[in-house]
Length: 473
Image 1 (spheres, rainbow, N blue to C red):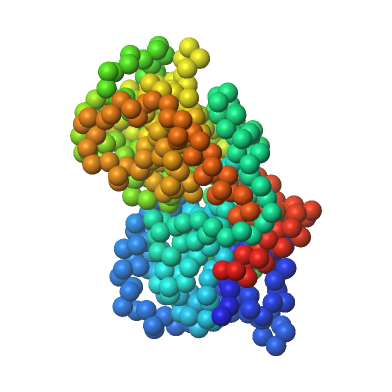
Image 2 (cartoon, rainbow, N blue to C red):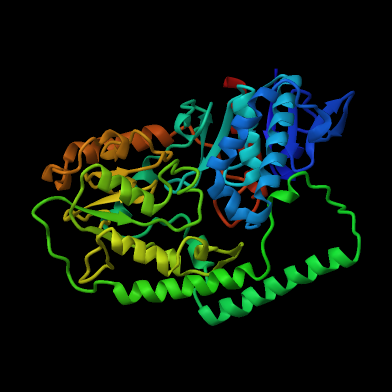
């Protein structure tokens, strides 16, 4: 049986290019070692005859992944064409996985949050080939291997010892920062690269949008054959002046929300107060990791359907004010506009911000019970002995103190005990994280989840750990 390394960069792929048991897969299809020479095989080399009965089901599953599709391709007028082209690729890749006898696909990402990796993931489901995702971990900065058989709900930690890394000190440091109301140390380079200057964002948007229009016009007037031959190039496209439109919509939404913000200490309801800890969107932490409840409006309707009738508090993510990062436009305007906030208001939501030194819904907050999709706040609160409601499927699934919304049948009378400090949760969550992250993670040589690129000094260590993972699973 062979192993497929999917979408890894050239440096990592190079480490295994002479291994006949390793098949490389990426934007240009398959790379197979035949008689000592790597040969490229196109995705559509395999006719999708084995799985034609599943075509309509694949279309339905792709539609369920529309948040991913719309994030990278805004051309809604061509979605019907895109869905069928993507579905055919799913069939072709599934046939290829079967033909080459692939036992597992190693994925160079935390989760399938681009359409190319989504297509590969659906092919793996169809061919019954597990996908191993390397989830970036904000506590250690290392990569936690997660095994996925079907959809995101089935994803779970592999739980194999593959390194000598002891996470005890990192968990303790992370816990201490949360007790001091400080943000996690890892990932601060990403935050520092963000830009929230509106005027600068306007000019930056115009620059990129005009370049896009120029390229589009040039391709119409001059017939050009792409030298890159990227099989997934069609999955990314945008309408003219998309960046500018989204920046303006984002700005208007932020101004509306700011006017509505409550800047005084909130009254404490004698019953349990729920606060929505909003996510930065679009981002993988809300979809696909959020599953069906990846939108805050949907979550609020779910809470109401479970009987929660009191006022809901809503705390916007600080990064929603960022227009651009070092990797491009944030596209927040695709998820935030004035109508979004008005919809929340119609559901009896009150917009709040931290006041008087109090972080509402934060790591140490005992007045409000936070609701998050997959946020790190749930980990911080658990280490502080507090509960959090989670609606998605995060890497820390099973962490003491975390309550999944599917386990709540009635919210009309939540117990006030959920707001109390629990020594057992604090102790057991610490033990849970140390056990989960010690000896079971990979060195993050590729910089997955960070702004950095491959660290040459860590490649050898990564390969040693990665080889062990390939051997035991």
